[in-house]
Image (tube, rainbow, N blue to C red):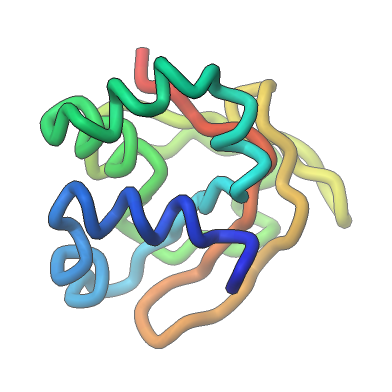
Amino acid sequence: NPALSTLVAAVKQAGLVDTLNNAKDITVFAPTNDAFAKIPKADLDKVLADKEQLTKILTYHVVGQKLTPKQLENGSFETLQKGMVTTTGSGEAYKVNDTSNVVCGNVKTANANVYIVDTVLMPK
């Protein structure tokens, strides 16, 4: 998906391609290029250059189970980073951590359900 090219580049930079491709039954909250563009360029460049921090941020976007839209209505889920994300909403309108909107949801891949989000999620 061309709208996810920054995310793909970040996953490659962090060395997480195989990890994510080989993971079974995951949910990925995938930030769009516009979500990454909300981060000041200097800050984004700094994170992209720091593999450990980048890995923490990216794995915070992944939950170790396939989540259905019904589960997102009022959920709290542990991420691969070991932090928690919360989800709220219904129908076509969902939010993650009260800050990020799901712009496209429940996209099925071979091993994941993907929810495209408009804001990069930051682990606490």
